[in-house]
Image (cartoon, rainbow, N blue to C red; front, top):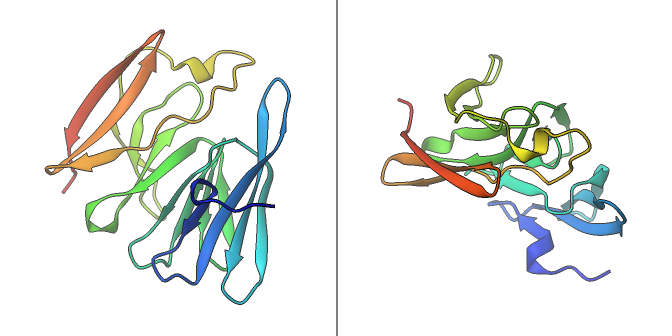
Amino acid sequence: NVIDAESLSISPTRKAAVFHRVTQCGDYCYSVIQILRADGSRTLVEEQGGPAPKVAWSPDGKLLAIGSRALYLGDPAGKLTVHEKYCAPSFGPRGRLYVRGLGASDAVYLWRPGKEPQRLLEVDGEPPESEPGADLGDPSPVTFSKGKLHADFYRGESAVKRSAALPK
């Protein structure tokens, strides 16, 4: 197996990485997702993940978030919890985790450990991923610039771009 830069996300501590590779394609493509550690050990995260998982590491490398048809959240040792309503993680300023809704809502949320995620941004209408039988991949992660968060919402053939101030 060939490991390339597109299929590998290395932690800030350089002690772990997330690796994925597409294993099969038919009507949909699937990938295997693994956590690889510097000591040579590995943890299987998912055998039928999406073809392009989104991986986000906290700035200190202690928290790992993987979005692939669900949100896998935990530590580089492989202790992960699965949250099926969320995906597309990204860490923003101050090390806060932002995620997108999955399925009928692709809203942007601030992840709050031990609490319900806080909905920050959404647009009317349903994303194409919500259609029965659709497997169009996860929404794109949130991006950040100039004290704001930015997200693309796909409705029909076009993308609606929205921005909001970062929460305090």
